Length: 106
Length: 106
DNA sequence: TCGTAAGTACGACGACCATCGTAGCAAAGG
DNA sequence: CCTTTGCTACGATGGTCGTCGTACTTACGA
Image (spheres, each protein chain N blue to C red):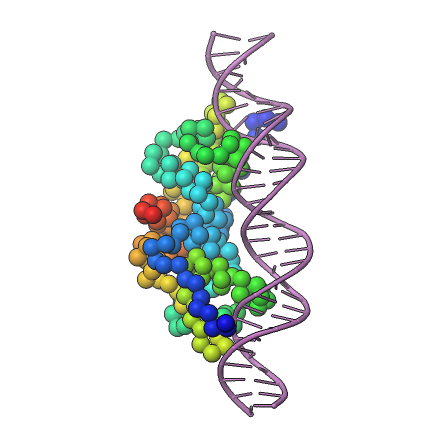
């Protein structure tokens, strides 16, 4: 029962409100920005987040279920990548606009 | 105490997470889309929303406090407009991308 | 085999949120 | 002055959210 494949919404099922909600949290935004700056698939633990591991799990799940990230099992790790192509196909320009806005200085 | 001027955040104080959260609700998204399609200032009641008036008041306040809309008192009405220029100045391309995404067919 | 590392599951808690109904206020029109 | 119109204030309610700690699983490595 252990190795169950994770649920990822199909590209044409991505919901705008779910994506925006997923991106409206500072911790999750930081995850997405990190993935944007270095597209290398990386494990959850390699993100320097200021929350506990169980909270991180929660945030990664929200991002995955909204279709923002993809998670692949690899050993004890879960490699995370941005679903950039899927997001661009469904909502052209949205991800870039949000990432650009997130880069705006305070 | 009646005529108190409404609080609107300054352009350089707009918070991305607040904007995204404001836009992550279907009712509020509909308000913004309506304002986008017809930029004429309009009263809250002229939006055809599927919630009660008190709920509408709540949603307009969330949008205003996030800096997405501007509300001006006029008689017993409150004229609402999109803060398009301010949003474009602070987060270039974000509003257009979101509105474009909202127009994507189901 | 034993331990460690990576992540999950579950339950809890306080905070916030979307919704409503009722009551109320201020301005405009008669 | 009275009524209507447009919107707000307040309280309540049920639900979701972000956070944590503890316990657990699974895989890799010494």
